[in-house]
Length: 168
Image (cartoon, rainbow, N blue to C red):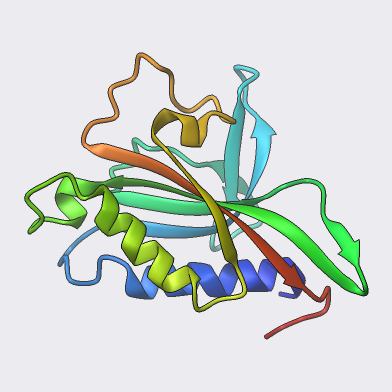
């Protein structure tokens, strides 16, 4: 892997190794880069490559996971002074009750804290946090009438500058 795919895969691995590790048996899954495609219902959906094949599958909330995350690179990537600059959205859908079992209030800010504490040590710079259904407004995954409880949806908008051939 090189370039933005390498940077995304490193962050994915850190998320998988660091988030929710104190919750025994949790099924949080950190996916890497997702590509936005159109499904059979003409809805935009994020799709990720399966680990053992070159096939892409749609990201789904109903896969029995306690949480998931994935990243989408915006289509326009700037080329500035020999470097590439991209906007990358980091999406989370998590069951706060399962992944923060000792927190007695809604654990929204705990998730924000945990993600920010990881991302701040990477090349990604958080520029905005969008919460709730608005976080997934670009996709046909959720509707206003959907009750996502106890799942929490959030998107961290980031920007990153990198070299095309980078592997570090």
